[in-house]
Length: 163
Image (cartoon, rainbow, N blue to C red; front, side, top):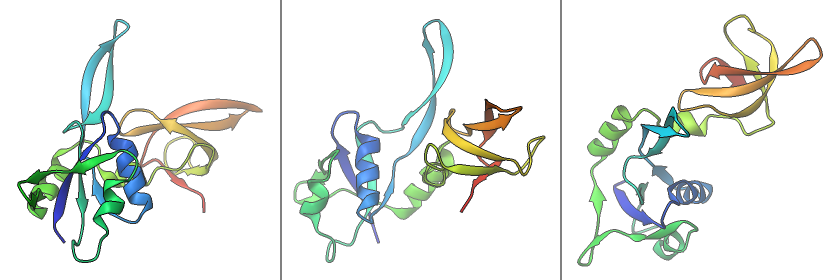
């Protein structure tokens, strides 16, 4: 299936992507690390590579285009005259390879409050509670040590969701 380009409403790329995924569509929002100075400190923020644009994989014969158009966060399809903007699968795969944060990384993270198990390091096999992402490759988890909750920053590959 081809990839189509959607324009989102201002600063709603994540909302549009999440709502489209909840409807069962395959989407791709390329993200990059942006180094910025905030309050005198250098911070790394994850931002969309193309502001206001996401990619969605569709079959125009089967999918309801008006349903996509009226999804929260979505502005409209990119068009060239009466033709929809189509992107090749090779370009999407190349973007996935080149971007620091991929769809797979974010979608596999647990929700806040879910139980996780630490897989490596000194806390291996200890249960923890997922708190929040900490950049693009790490997350903060809460571990109980000596009857006190302690925050740990771990690589996203260093823990897994307990089923």
